[in-house]
Length: 513
Image (cartoon, rainbow, N blue to C red):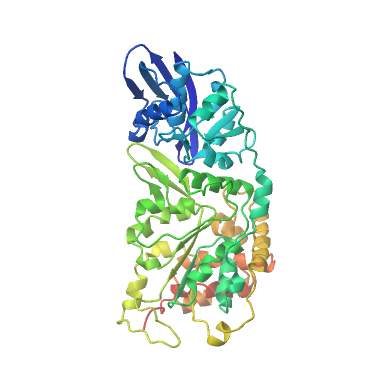
């Protein structure tokens, strides 16, 4: 007897439908075809034992399983449940009349229990697109898949429970999640707040400008000056995720298996902070079994690179293209996958190997030229993509010991959101442009015009500090963001002055002693 069951395979952050055909005929043996990987091939031992432990007879006949389309590689153990159901249905152990309306995925334990899988959310989205009535997933994934409206999602605890469900012996209630209510309830909850930061008002202002315009930012300061502490609070002043952004971000983390058990929707912008020993593949994604990398896991959020110069040159250079295109294409001999990578880069570094160059109280012990050599670990093209370069000084004792809290993240965030609304209206007719940092040269020429006073300030700064030509565009974009925060229609002289102040490392005298 021939039975068809429907599952899914994840490609990138999307899913495609996989038809699992099971034939049980006279003979002996088990054959699995359709480009399965090793984990899928090993399903024979798992499904056979699970079927027997669930109280059913494994057919003593020839079993052939075909997974179509045959040119798409099937990976992982998530096909155990549909294969086991197909074998039981083809051997007439239960009524298969209702199977056509369901997409079914799940890994089986040897005792027949259903274990969690990766990518349940994109699978549920594909099931709805293809018009399936319902979807059966492991209980651990049911809330994740149930955020998709228009499809009934059932959580399965065991193979026996699913068989009895199709035999109408037990009832499994579909899981219902109020996506909008959960999203609205949790989108304004943060673990850290800028009110905890004493002093460093200039750095807080730089963060506000960076978040308002979507600009990348580099912090340079001595050890203990608060670089990492403030970077961790950055998500609390970013604009809240839209529901579309939340679904897109959750899909990426679902495919990567990073969602916590029982988590439905990611309501906060991701904050990824990989160690400086990370490999290029781990950063951009790929691998034998392709997975999103850190830059994709930071999509719609923040990628924080602490100790920036300590990352290998190869790791840093692979970020150049994603920073511009906001997507990463992984091409290998067997596959080609696109992952989104629209992140905000936040990096921090010491000013020199010893960490105390320009320190007001401690003397730098580095050899002559060591500061420039240390900064030279970051290539010019990569530094070109960092809009704000801010030098941090240690907090004086009087400010550090003050009992008065700093400005709350909520207040800073309100100003950031207002500036983003201005940019949303400005770029409403420009697809793919959502903030000032993404402006093309054509848009920059249109929206970043300077009056005579502003142009004079910029000319003096370029000549006095011998700034490179690459700083010109960045200063204009940052000045446009500062003007948006002020509610100004035009860029003024003081906006340009502040933007120039955020280009510390572009000065040719920086690092020279």
